[in-house]
Length: 554
Image (tube, rainbow, N blue to C red; front, side):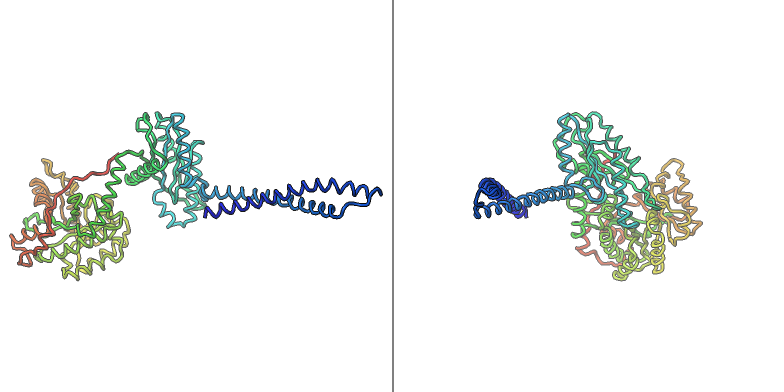
């Protein structure tokens, strides 16, 4: 395509040269023929001559026509050049400028950054590159429409221009992502901090669009071409600065949004680890690397085993045994939690089908699963497939789930209870559920979080919070399960509170399906008396906790 344009330009240039040559030749001939014809015309008019030669007259007339043609072509050519320049300027503007906000676009931002960096470095100054992203901008578009979202972006860009210095470069990289680059004294990095704080104070004020007022927040990541102390320049171009600022912005979002961070090398390491986890989760789902293990649940008064809680473990070939606190939040973010949970639940139902019918199975449900209006139907289908009695299954719902969609949660709980499945409120006291929700939602049981139970380790063995929750459960006629029983002191303190069910490392660490079968066989609580198959033994491995790198805290 570029070659075709080049050939067109050459062809036009050749035609212009021909027209110019014709006009020049016509003028020369006009001078020559005019010098011969005009004296003859004058002599004829004065009666002193016989008149000009007709051939020369015709040649003169032809010269005049050619001159007129050349002049017209010259005017056309001037107009074409003017139009071409305007078109090129417009095309250049379209190629470099974002049409919505008037900022530079991603393509032109790289060149502008490199130019500013070269200029700044020549005078021993640094450049700061900031990536800006509106938090939850998709919700604004979904709730109010894209036209409102566009107006928000326009107002945001105008506010940022007002706060940025005159030599700063502002660009819209796409969607709700903006970036600016500014030169500064490397020994005065606080200047960039002050600038970013001004943006938080002024650029992200409520957006008033007619009668509509929209509140928004933003996350910012900053990178520089100097080290943290502002002493040594680093070798990096615009692409590297953008990449580092993007990583810092991602870190700001992971830390809760509505904040900013400077890029640090460990952030890149953490991001690589995060990407490794995501890839590993997808591969692990395909390879069947997610297996359940089971923690005993005991009647505190009698000491009898009454059931197990299923806990998820990821047996990664690269990372070892990974606990749920690490991989479940990531699985929720990348949309794998539903598939992983269904695989684990299927295996757990298969395992629990071999236990004594008096033993129950407790399973935690992710908030993501509760957003699925067909979750109850899917769960009941699994129960039918595995011929598992609904009354032996207990679904655990955390308090945080109650705020996503209280109406859907109520409908789901009611549907499950109507089929005989029991539902408990997990980690009670750590979330934001109200007493009204606890009274109105049809829960079967309350689980006290382990963080409250640890207070019972004190010499007095007393916890006002645990006492209050137990009293509340009695008042609402809801049984209580206590998590985190790790010592004899805690157990004795809980026994004094009345009839409770408990679990914790005091009764043993979580066990594989094969280890559970061995335990139940010894106390004669197996539904099936036959030995486990080789497949059961092979797919069960020792579950141990593995220390893994955690995201750095800033």
